[in-house]
Picture 1 (cartoon, rainbow, N blue to C red):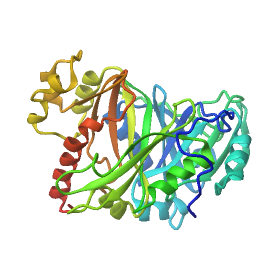
Picture 2: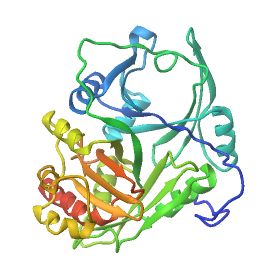
Picture 3: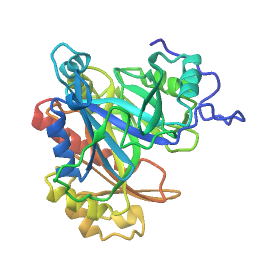
Length: 378
């Protein structure tokens, strides 16, 4: 896609109506090698609940999908049923990864028209899908790499997920772990492409820039990256965008681009109200997290100020803390959940803070570099 020119400075106040009102994230669809096993993994490891299924039994002949959900977080796990399919080619190039970030809207046709008129490339023309439970309207546009945004209008639907899906209720129902909603999703793009996609989200989707980090903010002795955070008008959808920066060795963004085969979603940040309890549950279920040296916690109170949590407990779990003018946040990052060192999850609890953990960048990226060194990709 060609670089777009800004129609007004990013961050500038605008008196115009939000032309793309978003209610939040509707679902995230991952293309995976084995949808059934992936659904089992997300149930077992992350506490997602089984919701719906589509495949041969529902009339599909090219794919099978399982839907799992925890509170407001809904994942769709999709695999091809034959060779030489678009889904299979996506898997060949990228491995398991996010294909669709679906956004909940009141009017999918208007969302499509507004974004296309501003330069978006169509992915899905507005389509009304219906069954005995009502109807859904969906449309979609392309964004960076092979990632797409689908706009979902579901006010007229009372079914389990979408038309074409049937309820899926196996006997296996592990308990949830306290995950609440998608806080943000981070995209990695290629060299010198961050501003292009920042401009896309501003001009095409009406997002504003919340914050910017350069290679002085996000760097270690060896690697660096740059990042800008874009948010929609009501703040319910936030997309940080990363690009590589020059460093002595290969950065995590370069490693991602190499193994994913291009730009894509690097990680999904999911919120909890009780991060200690959530991380304890996840760890007991086999989820592996990045670790930081215990020296990170020395003088933590002096750096962060008073917090409610016991520092010894945070140290034992590897949970990071950062503060901004609004409060503080706690966060921790899983190791990649796929064979390729690409997609991972962030667990985050906000206690007033609206930022993204700038004070933790150095410790986090040094932890990622240690994993890269073990993989031989640093």
